[in-house]
Image (cartoon, rainbow, N blue to C red; front, side, top):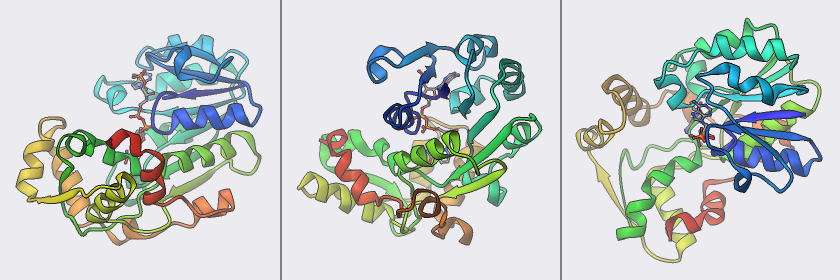
Length: 275
Ligand SMILES: NC(=O)c1ccc[n+]([C@@H]2O[C@H](COP(=O)([O-])OP(=O)(O)OC[C@H]3O[C@@H](n4cnc5c(N)ncnc54)[C@H](OP(=O)(O)O)[C@@H]3O)[C@@H](O)[C@H]2O)c1
């Protein structure tokens, strides 16, 4: 049996589906997951990872775990070491961690990866770049005014489809040969905010106006949701990303045997979110 945390998220939801379709027994975990979030007949278990003992019943009889540390978990001072103690005690052997490309470039802390490496479990690290689905933050304005307001309109990054991250995670959870591997997961081509806006417009079949925010305007918006140091470092990365973050990684294609899916494909599949 395979346990998926973050099971209602961008990656966890398609991961649960992919594992069930592959014939695996799955337990989907999040704080609020319920039967409507999972394929019929799939087990689900509500647990807050900030209280690691509550995860234990879900892990009973499991062989592998997909683990992500959400922003909420970090903000609440979640203790990944305590989670890993519960995982180890349960007898789970294999763990796939949803990490971040920023760990490789030194822009994000490596504490989660360090704890997993020290855990004694068989591990695989997934280090994705920015997700295609980050553009869902534009959905309200697109629905209301057919408009996107974002900074750095022509800075292109190879954003990745969360469903492709899920497919790579499914491979690492189910197949041999992924132990001790660190996969950098990007999309197949760099795409800028202006090009993403155009792709959403094409999917909608209606024009969408791109309004370029200045860094100061973007900063003001972001400060409503994030602490100042995070806002500044995110703006630094988005405005002048290092060369490593601009490059397309071969890992998705190497593992899945097909290229990662483009932003335009993702927009077509998720157009309902912008209608
Ligand atoms: N977005 C990006 O561009 C990007 C890039 C690189 C890496 N990442 C990494 O990707 C991860 C986020 O993945 P995602 O986008 O798939 O997630 P998401 O869509 O933000 O969803 C978070 C999931 O975690 C659950 N969750 C949140 N807090 C929890 C807690 N305390 N205990 C148990 N479950 C909890 C949520 O469900 P409930 O609310 O029901 O608990 C939900 O299922 C983060 O670790 C982030 O650093 C993101």
